Length: 237
Image (cartoon, rainbow, N blue to C red; front, side, top):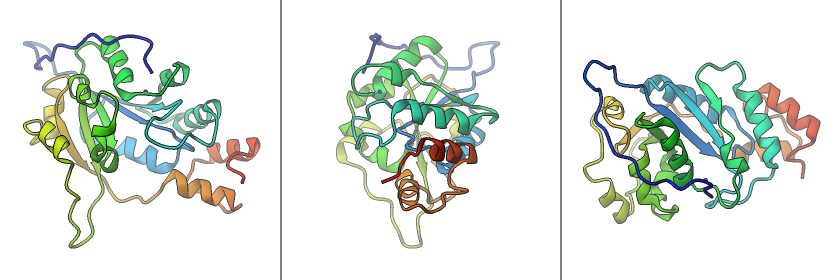
């Protein structure tokens, strides 16, 4: 998420202020969305409801630093994402990273949002695998100063244990783990919350494989996106 504006720090504030209700947090869900599928959308809707978020902003990356470059161009991924969320209350597309030069560093995007939103709570929504690899992110420790981190967790199979976190990350989140999702409204940043989500085993890799093989991806991708994919002949090997 390369940065046009320089973030200069945010003062953490406790909420609510006297006589004012605690502001509802804004959720941020980044990714390549190559293509966007119902797993992305369902997770956003589930988190918005479970955490009482004011909205979830889906932010497509132009140049993801930690994964292969997207198959579809930025304009196609943005068009599919806009079609997928059309008419869905509380989901919003934010295209700021597509207009920025350089790698799409999350810390730069959160710095911009913090300047725009002031002391409103921001929740960075992360999958468990992405969270486990957080120490490889650009200026990863600054993320805690800019937003809360919400880790999406799928149920484990019987007898399965969650893999341990890297020691540096486990040390960094010590004292930040919340006992309740209500803590996300108690300050503007700095809390880590693990949110369980229903199992939904869908990936963009699988969707691309189905499309490349000429098989149906119906009900994995919104119909409006499938029409767009067919029209522009995307993901055809």
